[in-house]
Image 1: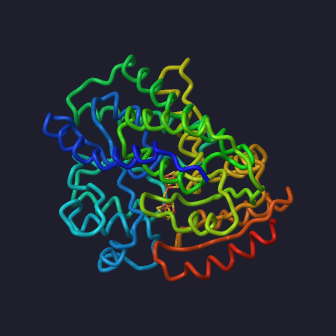
Image 2: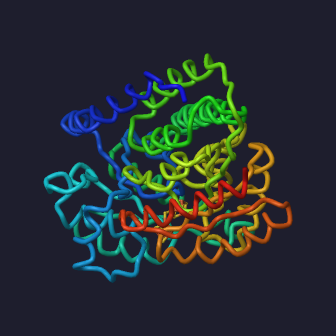
Length: 381
Ligand code: BJ8
């Protein structure tokens, strides 16, 4: 598979970002930390603040969190919380940049996250957007719009800047530009074989909410330019879609196993994949209304009913000509774990095989997962 120089550019931008944030803070800019796609970046940027994602994807802070929290909660929450009690950037373990944020903006999604946010308030001022979880009811949209209005007020209060309609429109346009670039990148994965592998794309997606938007877009344009030049040829490998929990920065375990066997990942139905960019915000509408309409439709497993997610999975499977789905859940993530039953049934009706992998951030099951992936690939070949 082709090596892309622009991927080094992503890595360098990532390393420099921490200094950029420090400079911004020195100049008086407010930095917001987030954990979830339901928080609209557009409102943060329109208030003149910057944002950085704080989700933990590494194993080294999990044991620290387990001294304070139950062991039977998902590794994403434990990894994130472990970084905080380890004193964020000043600690010796994986750094989640907590020390650099002025405010955390959280959301009511799964129970583990909700309860973690209650604890985070002791470390960093924490604002919670109350997310209605029956997305198709008209009351829900109205309520969510009200919540986004309150969030806008909170951002104005934090930064001292007024969020104008013009500024919001500009930010919506800019975020849509990023989404369109990601669509172009994913279009290249529809080829057989694709011009870029899944592990490389995942590492790019993990930087989406860490880099500044301008730097992310610049890096993406470079990568797309390179990838569009690739003449793809070679044997057909089983085309895999990963579906389920997000894979935060530092967590590439399962995709690496899949691609070290004979599979090639061509799409991810996850928050570190299509869920983050697939739908655009309608630029013809009032921006707050358009943001509420777009964000409430994110098919996270915290939503009920969540048939939209099943429809999306089937649509993606057709578009990306998927041979098999690897359903990925983090241990103790009940929402995605329970939802796999419906996903499996829907895929079965379409004749698409699915392999379920439930895992954590540790290495102890790498060999065992490898054996199961091997058998799955053999079946698909
Ligand atoms: S929109 S998926 S980013 S909530 S893995 S912490 S769900 S127990 S990360 Fe998520 Fe927003 Fe939904 Fe996406 Fe809970 Fe599950 Fe842990 Fe999770």
